Length: 593
Ligand SMILES: *[C@@H]1O[C@H](CO)[C@@H](O)[C@H](O)[C@H]1NC(C)=O
Ligand SMILES: *[C@@H]1O[C@H](CO)[C@@H](O)[C@H](O)[C@H]1NC(C)=O
Ligand SMILES: *[C@@H]1O[C@H](CO)[C@@H](O)[C@H](O)[C@H]1NC(C)=O
Ligand SMILES: *[C@@H]1O[C@H](CO)[C@@H](O)[C@H](O)[C@H]1NC(C)=O
Ligand SMILES: *[C@@H]1O[C@H](CO)[C@@H](O)[C@H](O)[C@H]1NC(C)=O
Ligand SMILES: *[C@@H]1O[C@H](CO)[C@@H](O)[C@H](O)[C@H]1NC(C)=O
Ligand SMILES: CC(=O)N[C@H]1CO[C@H](CO)[C@@H](O)[C@@H]1O
Image 1 (spheres, rainbow, N blue to C red):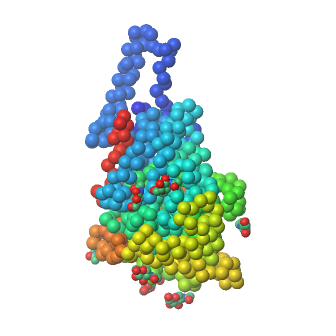
Image 2: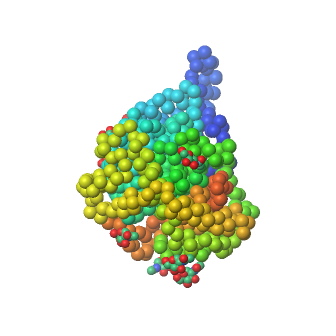
Image 3: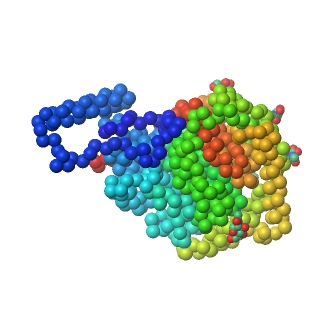
């Protein structure tokens, strides 16, 4: 009752309270020994209650025309983790309510209604886990800012079969497979008290199967953005992006090898953090390449992203890349400073990347980007424009990234299949997988989704041969003449660019971080084109994002820059999903039911 009307997550304060300060004072339990015996004391108490009630009703009425009741409860379309924690701590609702509400919201739009196909599978143990975490909160308090908070995971992130969920990267070849253990990031999430709500749809095998439209998998079908019917959600973390964008879960996780967090964050009007390679564990993540894969948060605000990253980041003996990270995981909440851009030098890598012939930036993106540069300048930064990457042309023509990825994909996917305790499909290798797809066309090769050329290309590789090591060295060389070169040459703190396009490449090959926030929306008169058998791109009102890029382990700084821009512009709030794609179930519909 005492909890303030929640502010929008994009309005969170620059220096949010530490976890310990988060607890909202609760009304003490009535204790018979201390109960108010005297008549005057009772009257005084009654008066206080009435005043509080009056203030609450007044507030509710003022800030919500639909009247009191609906008011103290956060709107799950936009609700932030801190808002949800405040409500949970105040006892306004429980994690069981949250799980029920998110399940109902998924039910409304996933297969029914606009059929967004963002979610592949729900966790049948989620309600039970929520109930236990609710009791623990009451008895001993919360373990972390994610205690009792429902999170959706991209379906390439392993969870123990004992939950009752599959881990399949969207492929029927992995249905019913038994993974040896939780993914490293899942272990951290569970330890922090987060509730795994379910698995999100994705581009099958994180887009490493072949030339297939973004957001399609055999198991999940074609997912689409909630901002226009059948719009390309981008990929490969498509379902995570869609689900975060309309509140099908509090927060989500995606993975990126080259663009797979950045691009779906862009198409779905959310914040995405692609962490530095080695900041978050990939143990238990269905792989493409250890040289590039990362796991990161996809959330409605960078505040939520910082909370999630602070929990999933850290060393993991099962992923030795994480052992190279700095000794202490930062509290990324401390990066959330509205003045973070003041006095910083931000470069614009125009050549090639702002004239991307492959993914081409639309004039409306370019206009919004020029505006963003003015905003960044107004926030106190110096814009260095252009700040071109010497290796730009070579980089976009280079085949080295693919050469390394194809070899790694075969080696690592074989390892993944072999480490499974069981796999009912019988698939135990890449060779088996290709055959499985051939043998099961109704499941894995429906019309328009037949291609598996990337798997075939990987299958044809010969392990760690001379060509592989030459390609690795070429990536390192391109990297040296890439982001780090231009940062040093112009004494920059970061680069900034529109999120969609090949700018993810220079970061991908060296494992550098990217932070993406909403930038704008396509105008109503934009011409849509086919983006696949069932999707269009662009589309009226479809969102696009802005990316900040930096050197290894500059994640903290980039989150600060993104936060300063996000808070100043609040672009996410400027547009909502199309009406049928906005789930109607709210906490009030499940409380007391
Ligand atoms: C996987 O999915 C199948 C089919 O939907 C389901 O029967 C099974 O319980 C799920 N979980 C596991 C761990 O296999
Ligand atoms: C990918 O598939 C689409 C649609 O079938 C086709 O237009 C395009 O040329 C293909 N691209 C490549 C590189 O094969
Ligand atoms: C990680 O361990 C593997 C062997 O398991 C080794 O080949 C690789 O070089 C190690 N990588 C790092 C970054 O330590
Ligand atoms: C982008 O390409 C157009 C023509 O394709 C050219 O006129 C223009 O100068 C290029 N811009 C940059 C920044 O390279
Ligand atoms: C990259 O490829 C394009 C054509 O796709 C070509 O025009 C350009 O010269 C190439 N650049 C380099 C550095 O090889
Ligand atoms: C679309 O609308 C914008 C204004 O929102 C206008 O500037 C632009 O010229 C229009 N484009 C077309 C192709 O009509
Ligand atoms: C949770 C959910 O809605 N899962 C669905 C995902 O899509 C497949 C294919 O359409 C359905 O079978 C699942 O029920």
